[in-house]
Length: 166
Image 1: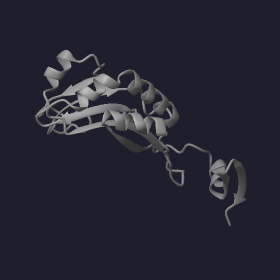
Image 2: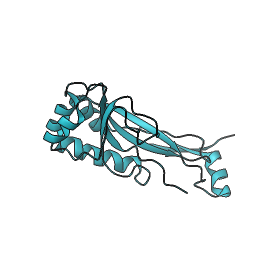
Image 3: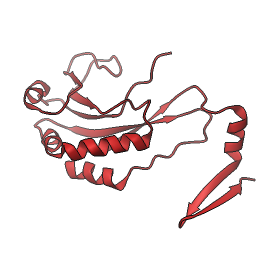
């Protein structure tokens, strides 16, 4: 079985964005460059825009809390160069991508983004994008899954409440 695609990255793209010119002068660790008209690495289709990506880690192997800590460290350490990237001529999309794995035996998924990460992303001028990726392999055994569906916990004002769903 192939490994899921990685979406834990920073991306910048635009039809007229000069990715080659930008890459020559950038100090950022660019992982991937695709030019308009070339094969798109994500889908195999022809790319409609020039784009670059900066991989921050493996989103399929890192949980969301780890991704946010890594992203916050990277954005903080590279705030100036990232602002320059976002302001580069031709950029129409500039984002930080986080990846949440969703399993078929779960009732759903919730992802909270830390205020510190939201603040620095906004300060840099990038949007936050969250990819929910379906992992088709169940995460829990049948008995664990049954228990998870009927028991829930609620934390309110520092107190833990436990109830059974009827």
